[in-house]
Amino acid sequence: MKAYRAIGTFRKGRNKQEFTIDIVAEDEGDAEHRILSNFGSRHGAPRRNIDIISLEEINPSESNAPIVVSHFRDN
Image 1 (cartoon, rainbow, N blue to C red):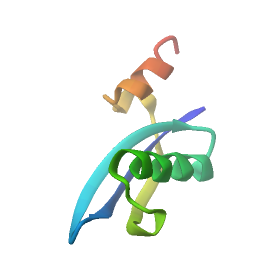
Image 2: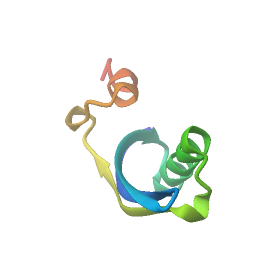
Image 3: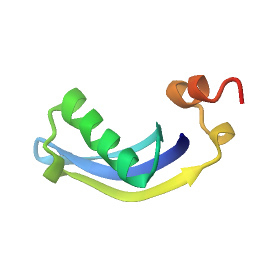
């Protein structure tokens, strides 16, 4: 598993909301799927309304996201 940071926007009503999210995934495809699923379930945003501008692998020590910290705690 690797840590990824995604930067992008999603449409919320008539406005676009920017986001930055750190996530743990197997590869870039899995990371993209997890991000789209996350915004769909939490914000009710359809996948076509979510625009991922940047998706890059990061060093887990660079992240403060609880899911990343928890996953890489013992490493």
